[in-house]
Amino acid sequence: MPAADAASDPDGERMPQPGVDVPDRRGRTGLDLVGRDLDRNPRVRVRDVRVLTSNWYVTRATTFDYQHADGSWTVEERETYDRGDGATILLYEPTARTVLLTRQFRFPVYVNEHPDGMLLETAAGLLDEDDPETAIRREAEEETGHVVGDVEHVFDVYMSPGSVTERLHFFAAPYRRGDVLDGARAGLADEGEDIEVLELGFDDALDRIGRDIVDAKTIMLLQWAALRGPFAAARSA
Image (tube, rainbow, N blue to C red; front, side, top):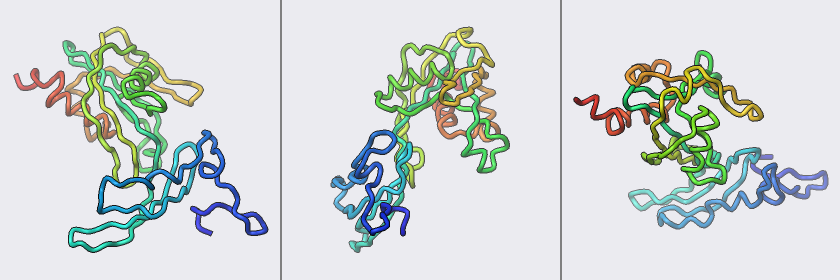
């Protein structure tokens, strides 16, 4: 029986599927309805949506008709991983030319050839039920201990559009040196977080790109800061 199908009882009756017919562990139902009403692109006609998994996040298989540039139609199927949208922020000190990053263990990169799974990153997290600015203020304080003041919205990006639905909202904000100490520990213990806060010179951080800074969102924000952000004028002077 395909993994996408709901289980059956010994009499062959279809069992209720969590997240579809009955609530899953997050109280959700109707997860198979997402995408069925899309009509913004006349070249795409959604036929069917199947929920493959609904644990904390949701994996779906969607079957749709797609019209190619030559006018022909084909039937396509795509799996999508829906973990919700997120936000990230670069905390910087313009005078001292420093940035605050975090270091924490990431199992997915550890299992995919990263030496120890300890990634250098900008503070980030999922929106959950919050708007992007509220969410990134919450995440920045949880992950660095810094209470963010005014924030600048930088851009929004789809991080892995081939399979992941997530849209990430990028922000930047200044911080005051001394408010957060290099090497401080942060994170929510009840969520298994054990986060180290690092204060790096901005030029040092740029130099680490591709070596020990290999996280996409962090690289994007550092490059934005160098090209158009708080360090752009100083670098071009």
